[in-house]
Amino acid sequence: MKMTEKYDLIIPPGVPQSTIVDVVKKFDVDVAERKVQVNYAIGTEDKVMRNILVFRGDHETLKEVESFIERELTDKIEKSFHFERSL
Image (cartoon, rainbow, N blue to C red):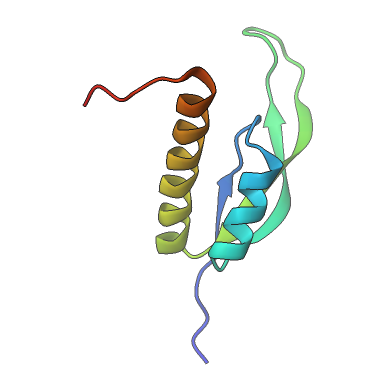
């Protein structure tokens, strides 16, 4: 059995829960927590660790997930504000 390397794709703050659920149903990824260092202001010495949500999966799948999220968010924004793409 071949072991594939796993990668993390940070779920940006503000991504709707419905989009996260859609990703998990559509793609072979898991939702996981990951600790990251957060700097709140330039020049501060505080090193604060926070848990963030990530999608965990293989590299190719996460590239597809990234594109999917971008399309989903763009569609939601366009529908909310009645924008039309000019391209």
